Length: 365
Image 1 (tube, rainbow, N blue to C red):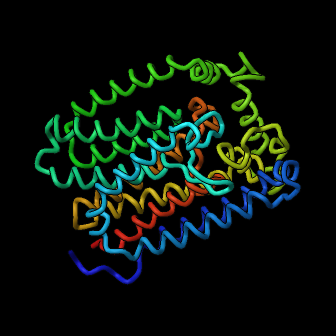
Image 2 (image 1 turned 60 degrees about the vertical axis):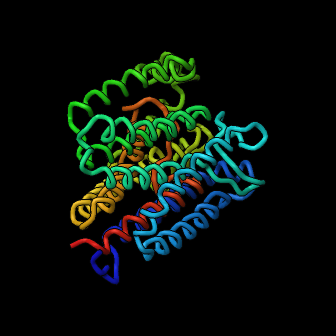
């Protein structure tokens, strides 16, 4: 293994700190009215977001200095722990229910979301597995069926919570890893077709998901029910125009738009800072994707390359789905926007994943 440089990719660090700064500001702006109404403290969510961001940055920098061979060696045990946590969260009385999903473990105010750990666990394990079986990645069994079965088992446990959004990100990330490892295109095409059929089956199996699809096609059929979130989100984005209404001047955050500081924070960003503010956030994500793919291409080791591709794919898939949902391009799935939305487990684990990317950037040629 080549000797690492002393400093990781400065562009990635700059982009992450910029997104975190925008995120903390927007979490405060989007949540101030709601948190004052509920807790009597307009800074309630902003203070917690700053704490999560500080913890996440510390872990990001810590992970960026570790020996990458450690992640290779611990990938299997890490995946086992993630599966154990996913099973544990499904036990009544152990897992905590929020928003209709049993997705949390914790005591009191402190809680974790095991599905977030699983996304990173799948990336590391599949990167290790595909590296060990590099000569057979073009075969159906070892190049597609086995890694897909592992990701599928994790997806099934997440769907029992249920959490279709996180499960979709996990399976999309697994697809990116399998593609990057060199799976044959005819197998990938078949996988896509099976995924579409499976997704349709999952939607039809739950009435509330059917309502989300019909609301996506025509939210005005049920403007006070299934279509309410999308309509209110568009009411936020539309008036933003080019320059926005001004920071803190959103109308929709005043208890009109549900979850304005989490899933729909991009709507508030577009309303207050306009096309320029929303466009800036999208450009920052694009730069992050560029630098992540650059790391994946330039690192000298297949395991490193797959981890970098997996982390980059996970972030971009989640960001694309979130922005697509709030703009009405995708059905509502309940996914946060990386680095911007409020959320402890999601923000911290995503920053840990970026720490991996920074670690690998020190080995680029």
